[in-house]
Image (cartoon, rainbow, N blue to C red):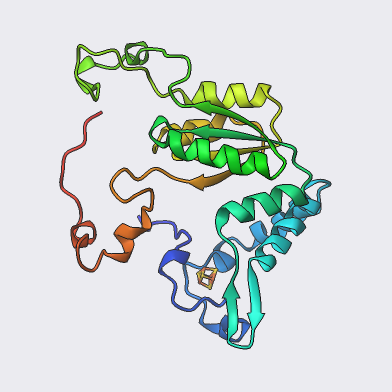
Length: 230
Ligand code: SF4
């Protein structure tokens, strides 16, 4: 049976969406070809009250991250500053920080910066609640510090629920693990952005493995054979 085509922008070298002159070279897996109705439907969403203004401000924010100089287009501000500017644009007063215990120092620094810039910062660390991992039905041999130690579970659902109750205007994720971040996103009711994702090895810069995937991390492109357990 022939497989249904699915969008694969990640492999596209044409980028006709950015270059209308290339429209006749759009690849067969292009979503503009496969699902054109979704683009029309998205415009209906952008016209919705609240979304319209938010989307416009997001584009203005994008614009303001660049400057035209005699030497050409240059980038201007780091993501933390972008977060501050965008929050001000939207009139956000209280920000909610969901952070990993491994980034407690970063959370403290970020809280100080955001407060200095006029925001209230509600924050919840992943281990809050101090509920043992056994409550997840986890076999103790999967505890990082050994089966006999007390190890609190990361609790992204509680992080989300507490920030929901705290009435935050924008939730900010800082360094949550893969999977925990997925649950936080699922349960968070506030608008949500990510300041940083967890990468224990690469200083929370997972893209470093891509930038070195032609050399030190070439094994990634070869396909990883290490076993996974569930
Ligand atoms: S939308 Fe189409 S043209 Fe644009 S990157 Fe995706 S596949 Fe390429």
